Image (cartoon, rainbow, N blue to C red):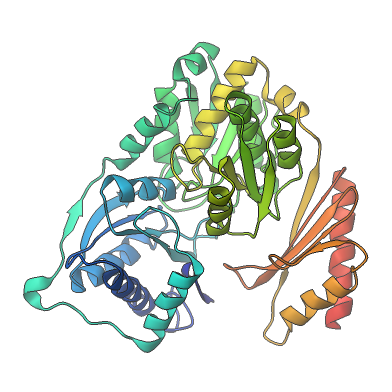
Length: 462
């Protein structure tokens, strides 16, 4: 059982001991720290915070604890109830709120939950602000409101519909073109809030929709990370239904992966590649993704005479680099699309609408679209950390053994070889070292990962 405190929020497993897991006490403590920081950042005596959650079993409990902690500080709360991460982000700006909290542990299993924290732009907090909140929580430095100054809670369950309308109004989204294409799509939403939002969006675009695990009960039918090995049911149903494609989202709907008409993965990394190809083909510009993302985005960007830049892993880092480089689309290779015309947050609804418009515009199958892109293959692995491991020492050792190659230490250690790369970094959300590799074949990517793991074991002496 684990509790992870970081500048991006607090994440942990439900139950257990205070300070070691995400208990009710820890939820109240961290929500109070965030609210206290927010009050110090605004002159408003009663700031407003938007709060929404995914469908996790623990979500209703955690949400009540969080909202009432904010009320106790004199903060007004807009309760979105079951929502998505990008919906909450959009709601912050539409409500002209001072901040937002999303209760979700993203792709983690159902035992986990988390508080993701937003500023008044509906964007994730930067490192400096996250550090301040951690310090407030560490010192228990909260001053709660007296009885006449308590905040209030207002319920608003309209924002998923507002979010869908905002997506349909984007300049490059063509719902009529998609409708004419007559697509049939199978949706796997792992019984979370994507099961509310994605089918609604598809039907608004005239898409025949087959729902798989779209009941938002929070009982995930499989590991919710949208990887090939977790999506066998989706693959079988796409083929059975003779659908044009399948798609899946993670529990909070900021990661998106597609499946071709033959039940094969389009490739999570290629979600961003395809959407960027469409956007750049209509509105030329620059792109950004993180260091763990496929080289294919760089190649597609250059094809459209744009400039590609890589950032450290983490949405806030990608957004910062996008703003600095005036990128018109960006995101992360885990299927996260950031399209600034909408907002600076990973948004699967935006990704679905752009992808389907692209597919209708190209008049081709999903497998044909995939074949039109540079072919790279990735392997994603992890090493579980134990308290006795010197993680920084291990990463430095790996760096030192590859000094003859192109090495980046922007975020962990990334080694670029002529036709492949490997990226090692300590996760911000789990007690693991992530190992990403990419090469020109799956066999080579897997072999590079195996060799890397063996090297790490030798460095660590295990």
